[in-house]
Image (cartoon, rainbow, N blue to C red; front, side):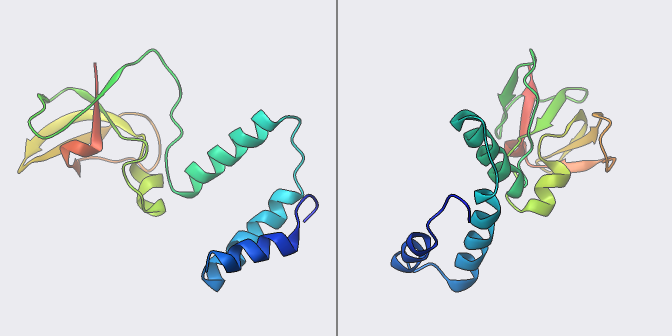
Length: 140
């Protein structure tokens, strides 16, 4: 680790009673991190934020002029409305990579679910995906 203190890191992990597999993963990540050079602390912090979000399966959504309102049970949603799966709704990485941040049209409402066909052109193509209202943001 180029810019880290191995002993200090291990002492921190032991003091926090971190499980060995977790500690080993952290050490491996820090070894790779220590080899990177960032021109500024801002770029370092941005890289760290993006890595953490992507590792958890969160979507990185583009900033746009579109405005989104969080939905909840009882929210007025109609067939044809444009919705987005919240960028961090699914916390399991495999589900998050597939669903988080996706944009589509509401095609139906059944048994409390909002059924969506994705229109964002991303893969995999998702048709008739069922979501609870709290998973979605509505375009306003």
